[in-house]
Length: 151
Image 1 (spheres, rainbow, N blue to C red):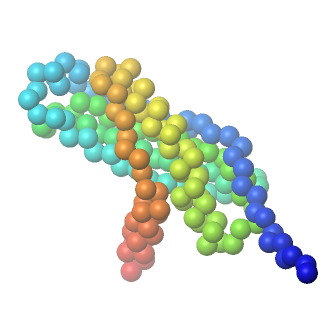
Image 2 (cartoon, one colour; image 1 turned 90 degrees about the horizontal axis):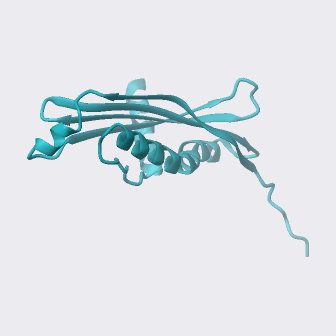
């Protein structure tokens, strides 16, 4: 009896890095201590994926925008684009999209979470720990949004 072997795909991370970062402390943290309400924290997260310039790898970026307000007063604004370069070969297109938009962000997210917590803390506020993200759900939302714009 012969065993059929499935061709194995290649999936490796080459590098990960902060591509763009901005933290703006608009209102000092002392304002929070005097407030009787919790600040409103608006977190926007988007995943971008593209082939690298040489065409041999993919660049996957987690784009995070956070705006924190206390009433109408903005406390801080944080913008972070954190990227990873991945070699991904030997997968069908449907599987490639899942890897690019779900698995790669899942690898990058703990680093994004740490950078944000540290930056917010160094900016004079209590650390902001992002909740875990369901990247499969985020991927579905991005697909639906893309389909809506096509209609």
